[in-house]
Image (cartoon, rainbow, N blue to C red; front, top):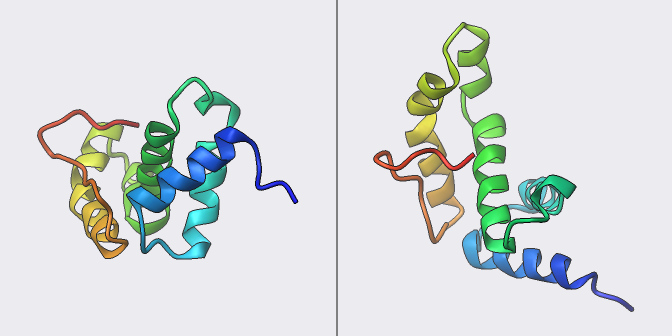
Amino acid sequence: MSTGTNRQRAINKALTLLLPAVPYSDSEPIRAAAGAPHMRSLPPPIAVWLAAVAHVRHQHTDYDALRDEGYDKDSARFFVLDAINRKLTEWRATRLLDPDEEDPS
């Protein structure tokens, strides 16, 4: 039985290394997003990181509500940064968002 393409295996490995405690219900959408066609030019660890941050932002924070209230993208991202890092910490992430760096996604 095939375990997927080399890229899929690399994404699986990167996801396990980055987020060792991510629940399956969150890992599958992250895995799918990291494997999307527009991510193919990126190395798997970067694709997984971007997909994970975007997933957490939209599924586990008030980001979308803030945007609906009229906040611009950068302001909304600023206000949810701590919530994103809390969720990443809960999943034992090996990396967190740095408030002094530009948002990756």
